[in-house]
Length: 255
Image (cartoon, rainbow, N blue to C red; front, side):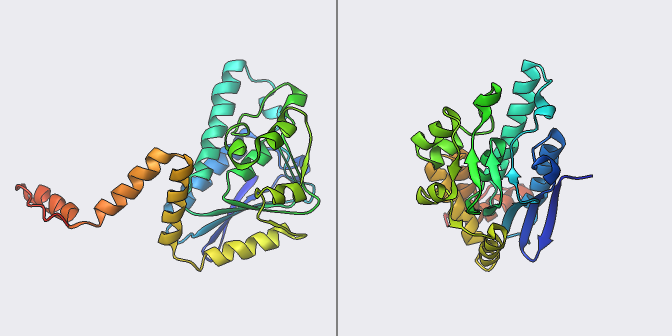
């Protein structure tokens, strides 16, 4: 039975964590399901926005399931668990479509890193953020010390990762990590996602690519994608393709 669902509502795709009995802790099958769903989202032109939600009131996601990685060898832990998860989180962060996370419960460890991979976040007033890895003898492995350090003030990241402290919604909102605080985070996040669906998909996609290139989020790929899109609309590109197919020398118009 899948613990990560992909549902469609109009032009909004909803990614839903569905393992509330275990506080939506992430397992290897859940990560694999994420990868499959992200592949689907990337390929569908009729999806304009992605909404990330979770079932249950206690936790958006309490991190990685210790049972899933506790018995792995050091090599397996680094290669399969950490690097594999990192690739999936990076893929979420680099989606061309905008993403909204509804943090209705606590987001700890990998759950906080998952929310950080989205473009904006809506948080319930009673939810908290934490990086508790040091309490079980590990370190953040899915961008907690990298992407999160770009989104939050360095002292705040250290407060969580080094001192084990939790950050509440008010502080997360004050520093801009959270866009809104709402009693019903999921409902408010849905309103935001629905509004995006009414905007120009291409304009939103290109604006996101430009912003990501400026902050260094896969900047090289973003720049090449934007350049390739521009040249694909040129008469030079049309002439080059036509000449290749006709097996003749191209005469580029320069437009």
